Image (cartoon, rainbow over all chains, first blue to last red; front, side, top):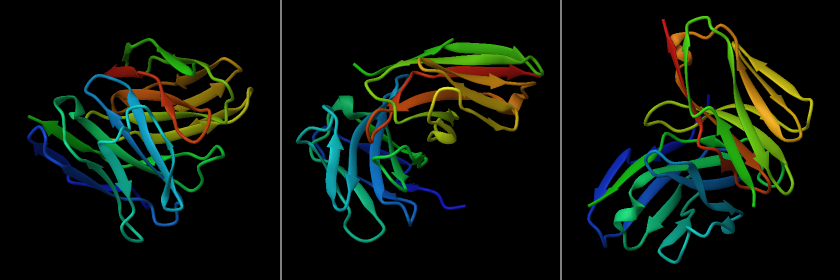
Length: 115
Length: 108
């Protein structure tokens, strides 16, 4: 069964450093998402991506964040200058369609620890 | 403001003891309501999508129902392997808005 994969599973970085989180969505899906979950809190939407551009973003997704689909399979989230409060689980998700009611399939997550 | 509230926050059951989890929501326009299962340190695993009031879906010991204001996840004769956090999410547009989840523990 196809699944979303994410690398690395755990990333430790120092405050102020840049990190890139990587995702391989399910191959025939068209919409891609990043969510985050701070320990003990809700899963929160960050950004959605379709047709090589951002289709929607939350207030959390400020200028420190960017997304890219550098090739036909990868989808990345970059945090330019990490802060302590960026420590969280980051989940990538993909969906066959985004603007109608289609389920989103989540990857296993990347645990980001900022020290 | 779109909002999802799940109750109870935690639920402890004995194996075989059926129960229900609640998800109440306020949303400007509901495209779909989703149930996910999340194990510790893992990503949410898709269970069900419900689109309209009155709809029901079943999968093994789980059954999800939807009204205009809330959804229920019924668990019949649960087993220890059903222990997890169950997340409810609504989709007013493209993204999902999640509740905090109900942490279910099933003791043998």
